[in-house]
Image (cartoon, rainbow, N blue to C red; front, top):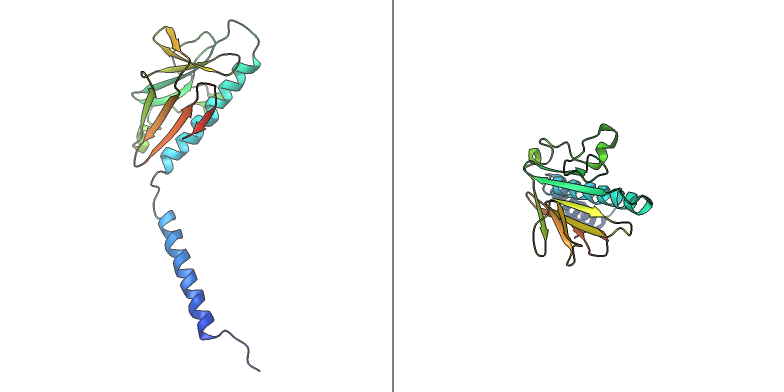
Length: 170
């Protein structure tokens, strides 16, 4: 008795491998949207980190603020706990921020910040983890309708911050 594959089995196997190869190759052929999604994931993680710190700190004078810059595009926590609008590029916490020079723009990605009513440059979190937008030197609201940060390049990857404090990819 001879053992082996029939012609039909071989043809079906080749067709299945061809279909899988076509889809897999197109996925790995380029990095379209990869940079935007990477920055999106980093921002969600960093914002949740700062939000958790704000919720666990019982001091009243401490401000947990996350800053954004659109030129050059960068994000990161405040340099100190008094609410500075300068982004901290502390090497001990470099996972929370971009490098501030060309990390985002070097990937041909722009940073677009929007609230439903205006743009913003910083977000503060209160002890309940609720975001407060900062425009200039005064807090203008609690992102009443939500805030959105877009990474715009070959594709758009967005981070939404709900008025109740829920941070998610959108």
